[in-house]
Image 1 (tube, rainbow, N blue to C red):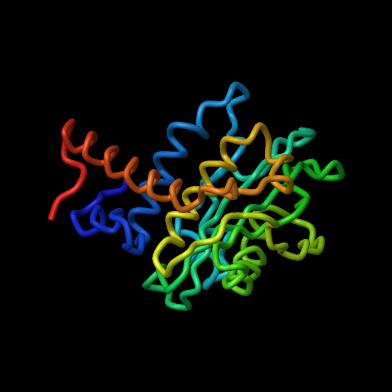
Image 2 (image 1 turned 180 degrees about the vertical axis):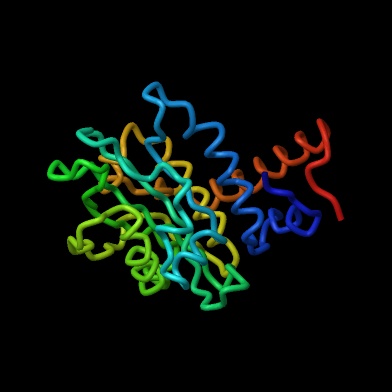
Length: 232
């Protein structure tokens, strides 16, 4: 469970840069309300928060760090699964937040030739509100995640920039766009739809980001009224 401090909460105000803790809180909320509890007992989409993604990217120890996650598709399953990971341009192992956030979306399926649940990666899409500013960090994260999904050394597809995703109009909204993208990708009928989506790109992106910030402020305030959620 993510503990939200007052300073974390304050980053949700317009014009503020969302920090890693607020992004982690929002992803945990999305995971609990939208991703868990599917009828077949497995999560169709897995969300990885900024701290986990940063550790995986910089250490290359995805297998060890993600050992407790149900990442692999069930052997023989034909369903496409998805993984959403938060990308940071930071190279610091202690500070997951750098100067820009974006979202990596990996689609994968069970490898029909494997009996141990190993997967085949279909593609990797990069949703970046600054037109690919984080492309190299996204490629590094995708390469680092590869061993946690695949036993065989099949080539990881080149990370492609998602076409048509909404762009930020300032220097502070990248984290809010990551959450906007994540919500829309999770709400898609299937990860199969991801390549065709224009995440956040409905002509009202700036308004959608303001609404998202206000919505998460209200959520934290409501949760705080029910019990201790954030503190100084």
